[in-house]
Length: 463
Ligand code: 5AD
Ligand code: SF4
Image (cartoon, rainbow, N blue to C red; front, side):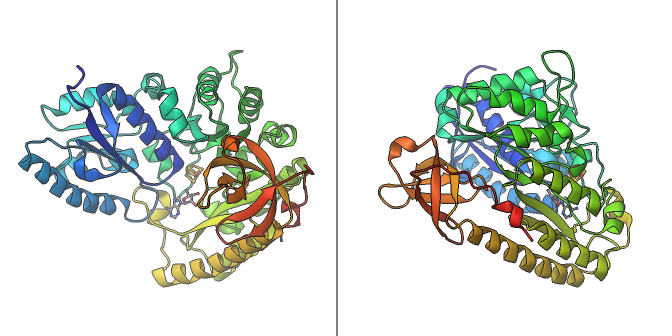
């Protein structure tokens, strides 16, 4: 496709998970060579992409109502003789396909998560008619998605995501991911190493490896064998400039010995892990097809804490899964205190058409709402206790940007909390030890530490 005469404006709205945030950036990178520049408002955009999520609630309905608003923008554009192209990407695009074109005349392009690299071509074709591309092509989209420039990378900050695997083979009975994102595929080690090297060279210091089931990673290593995530992390920790590593989201079944060892051996691997459990009841875990029991999960947590005593945990819970009794629910409540989570997401079960749990007998909205409120109260209590335990601790902070007050910087703790510190601007992009003086509600406050003692008992006192 030839380069447009003048720059065009691109507006990408991302819904849902970090995979979508990453994909949205890669779409913008791929469109940049065609002259597309990102804008923060849909109002003056020439191309609007909605990168949708289908995991919970009436996701598709939300997209249709957003498209109603966008129709207005398209009409405004037409009055000014400006064509506004509208694309729906992501998991709703994958799940709904042609239906979107039928229901929403405003949409020009429907593109599934595996086809983003074909966007330039789809755009050219959209000049002649509306298009749906929701195949799972055999080629690797990452081979074709353009990399951002060094300046664009740095402008996005000192922390970046890198997708290492996509899709999922677990088939939890509540979840659409195996249907919308397809079966599990891992990127080869060499490609990930090259991407992380490029990010580090541009000044990125913290890398979060992402994937729908990231610890099922089994990409091809340089030796031709499948590497585990633990082995990949060891390799990435050797790269110059990589100060911090994270990975998300994991399945408890895939927490293998090499990954647990990585938590013991790699100082760069942050002592914070999101390990979704979904329920504390064995009966419900079985109905969810989670393939682990409560005891298995606790054993894994225990092994991880032995490997890295200051490891803090986050999780996801679903309440009101079909058949969940009051006793089952209490098992989830009890688990919150037993693990002593630093933070947790909790959701009411939401029926996803086409998944096995959608055909099971459903609980009432009232029961779900009441249980969610009780679970969230327990989670909030644990979060507050965790934050209170931060007082007086010395922790690593990666400085990201200037703070609100003069002379102040904002950084991030290993536990993802923002930390406000009086510190010189040169420290942006650097990791320093900070002593927490005041654990606020949404941010921690601290001062640069003179000494650097490692505090190991933070998370170990949970519950
Ligand atoms: N209903 C409610 N929550 C869900 N999740 C996934 N599918 C559903 C569903 N149908 C939650 C799980 C998962 C997180 C990303 O979203 O807790 O870990
Ligand atoms: Fe969905 Fe995660 Fe279960 Fe895969 S492991 S089916 S992504 S909840």
